[in-house]
Length: 375
Image 1 (cartoon, helix red, strand yellow):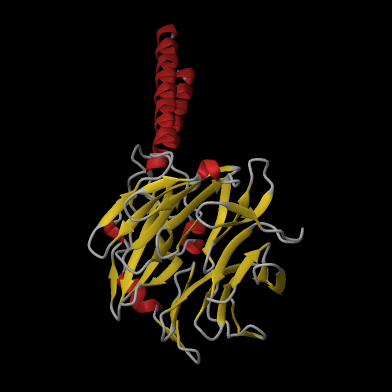
Image 2: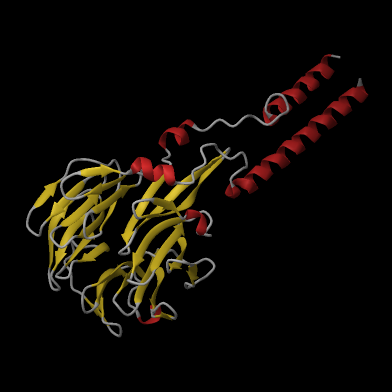
């Protein structure tokens, strides 16, 4: 009898441990780390099309066993309109969006993979990229008035494409760069940065036909961002802000992390990790701290719109800030309660766990049955 009780005890303890104590599924309790550290919304890019702002990034959906990003796309013309539901791109994050005067190109990604969407104000179209359906994420793109130049790069390989809005031309095989990090039109040619197949960092000029290497000092690494103001580009490399006149690179500013920069016709506004700095070509001036993480920004001819990766959104007219965060967040289609379905990417490990539990229960039953027969 003693052994019968012993095995019955083991059986019920195992059942309790694996099935939640009373045989039912345990109630969902949000992870303290997720609950305290996960922002509702993260802003990664802001753009202006002459009539309205577009804000891109991601929100989060929390599951009982984790969380997953959801794409964010919001239009703002005095009223916020959440367009995120129109993006049929799964768990991807909106990384960038650029307006060319007629339509938007919107880049989105999940880890190193991604895609490209065209939006003409009415419809969304997926633009085919090299390697579909597992295309590498777009790391850089710009428009020169005739066509887009679109680049990608990940651990030494990528692609470089021309796109005129209809047709795509792959120029990867004639490019000396196997992985592209930045692309900027500088008035009469393209300025590109990336790595060669030998993983050597290079800066190149490209006139649409020929690539020419731009000599740079050793201290200048891969250019991760560059913005042209009609006179010269400011480029970001190794956390340095560098002025490039077409021949020489001059480091003018250093920061631990520069997340964005834009020109308004009078001065540059530089966003960092919760910081904002103006630069008129000569003097740098720090603005009051209004953000807590990486700032992304754009100018529309009248004022700046700025947002960070914790979802703070503000307007800046050159003198004072106006907080738009409450109206912005209220317009989003956010679900306040977590989903009780497991996250998709955790389905396979979840099923393995179920199989293990079933096998353990069968094993326990056989032990009990054998012991009872001996008794």
